[in-house]
Amino acid sequence: MGDYSGKRGKVSARVKVRKVIIPVFMLLFFQFVLSWNPAFSEEVRVRVLTNRASVEISSSAPTYLINNKTGDSITFAVNRATYSFKPDASGIKMVAFEGDTPPLADFFPCEIIIKPEIAKNKISLNKREYRGALLIKSENFSLDVINILDIEDYIRGTIKYEISPRWPEDAVKAHIVAARTYALFQMRNKKNGDFYLESSVLSQVYGGCSGEDTVADALVDETRGEYIDYEGNIIEGFYHACCGGYTEDVLNVWGIQRSYLHRTRCPFCKESPHYYWEKKFSFNQIQSILKKNGIDLTGIIEIRVKEKSSTDRVLNLEIRHQKGRLHISGTDFRRFLGYNDLPSTLFTIHQRNRGEIIFKGRGWGHGVGMCQWGARGMALLGYNYREILKFYYPGTEIKKLER
Image (tube, rainbow, N blue to C red; front, side):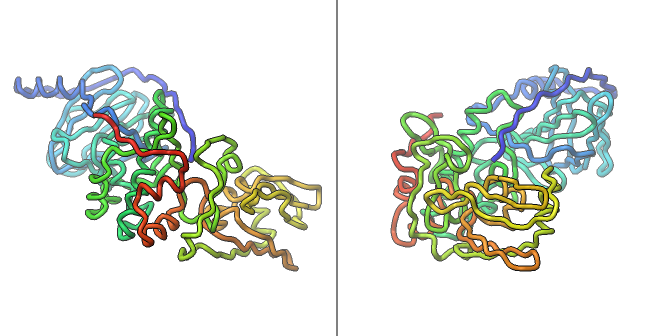
C-alpha cells in the first residue's frame, strides 16, 4: 500500500474557443459548475490511470469541462460522442472522433475536470464507467486521471475486486467497514496530495462501476458511514485474504506501531484454498528477478531464512552467491518475486539440487489486520460483523461519520 504525493508544473493556458451563443440559464449553470464542491465532505480522490499518452472520454448524457487551475471556463456537451485527450506543449489537446457534436475548443490548460450535468450520470473513461468527476492532469507529456467521488460510491466500486459479494453478509459487512476505514485514514493523512488512493493493490483495487454488485450495494447502504475507531482516531484498516493461522504484528511488516494491529491467533480461515501453498523457482529465475529490481547477483548458491517473527513469518533471508552474501527482508523478497508468485512470507524453504528451490507456505497477503477468509469463517459460525472487526482490531469500536 503505497504512499504517494505529487507536485504538478503549471502550464499557461492557450485556449482557442469557437464562437457560440449560450443561453443565460446555461451561463448560470456554468458558474455553478466552476465552483463545484460536493456538500458531502467525505469525497475520495482515486488515481485510476497514470502516465498515459492519451485517454478517451464519452458519455450518453450532457457532461461539462472545467479548468481546474485558473477558473477560466471551457464548457461543452459530450453527448453520445467520444473525445480523445492528449498531452500537448500548451496543456491538453482534445479531439472528437466519434459522434456529431464538435468540441468548442481544441486546447486546454494542464488540469481539467470532466463532470456530468446530473450527479447520478456516469462518465466513460477508456470504455469503463465511473461515477463522480474525472480530473485529467498533464505533466511531462503524459496524463494522469483521478476519479473524484463520494466515498460510499468508491466503496461500491471495490467490492467485487476485493471480496466475494456472495459470502455471508456479516463477512462482507466487516470487509466494507474495514475498506471504508482504510480509505478514510488515507484521506485524512494525504490532504495536500493530488489524490489519496491508487486503484490497484497498492491501495485497494477499484474498478469504477464494474466493481459494483447489487447485493453488496445493499450492504454498503446498511453500514453507510461506519468506520473503525481507536481512542478517538480512525485506524489504518489493513486487511488481507488469508492469514494462515496467525495475523502479523504490523511492526514486523512496515515498521510502524499500532496497538490494534498485533498478532492474533486465527483458527477460522482453514477453508481457504490459499491456506496451504507450494511454489517452485530456479536460482536463475530468482537471480533474474532480483537483477530487474536493481540487485545484481552472480551465481546463487543458497537461500536460507535468517530471522522469523513469532508467527513464523520470514523477517530476513540470506542469499549466498559466488561473490558474497546478500541480506534481504522477507517483505522485500516477496515484493520482488511477486505477490501472486510468493503468496505470503509465512513459508519454509526446501532447497533442491540443480539450482531449484521450493517454498512451502500458508496464507495469502501481508497478514496484517483482518483476515478475509477468517471473517468468512467467523460469519459462518454466527459472529456478526461488529464482533468480527473487534476480533481482528482489538480495543477498537465502530463509529459513524457525521454529515
